[in-house]
Structures are given as structure tokens and as C-alpha cells.
Length: 159
Image (cartoon, rainbow, N blue to C red; front, side, top):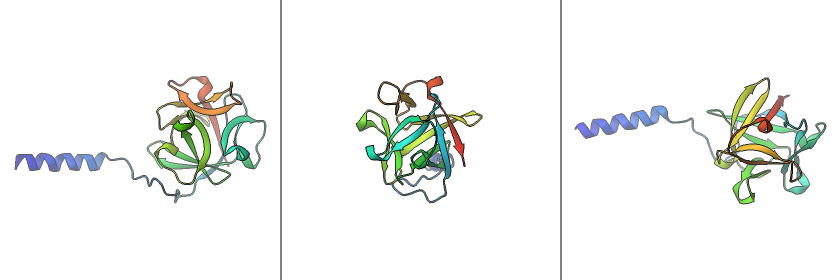
């Protein structure tokens, strides 16, 4: 009887502390917020549609390829959909470079959004690495920084 009560208590505690249900492998059913994202180099993030949606930070102004839809999925986590209708992923199989080439959001298409105030944020990939600009490789976005510093701060401008 003692063990059964302990088991019921543990199950109840687990259910009460469980994170909100995220439906991975399904399109987000809520409406996202339309946004432009500007990086620390003062350039806008772009999903280069001719390069399988690779994300780069090299645009002075915003047009179609610089528009994203940001979905809040709870617990400070977001998914990001690019103008090509694909979700952004920090692909471990591609050296953690970010690209918009996924049909549905899974865990590796989620990011922890750390609010720094004044529209400034830091993005942490599912790998626990921070998103930064790789200025040595065409200003591509990559999630390979183990700690956050000034180079990993982005501004999100919601429409």
C-alpha cells in the first residue's frame, strides 16, 4: 500500500510539472507573428530560397525572403517559418547551420527565445548552442556557440 501511494504521488507530480504538449511533426495550428529579424551586424536575416533556405545575415532592407513567421509554443520556446513555408532548423548533420527546409516542426526546429528587452533576443537551439553569425562563411547563421555574447543578439520586429 505504501509503495502504491508513493507511485501515485510521483505520477501526479510528474503530470503537474509536465511541460505543455507540443505537437511535433505537425504544422503549428496557431497563428504565428509576422516578423523581420536583424542580427548584431545590423543586417537582416534572409532565407536564401535558391540555396535550400540557408539563413544568412547580409541584407540591408527587408523584402519577401526576409519575412518570417514566429510561433510561440510555450515555455519560452518558438518555431520559425520562413517565406518558403518551411520551418527553420539548426541541422546537426550540416554543422549546425540554420536553414528553412523542414515541412513540420520537430524538437530540432525549436529554439529557446531569451528576451533581452527592447526587441532584442538570444536564440538557443535544441542542441543547447546559441545561434550566431558565421562571418567567415558568407554570414550564415549557425548554432555552435557554447556561451552567449554580443554577437548572438538579434532584434525581432513584429509586424
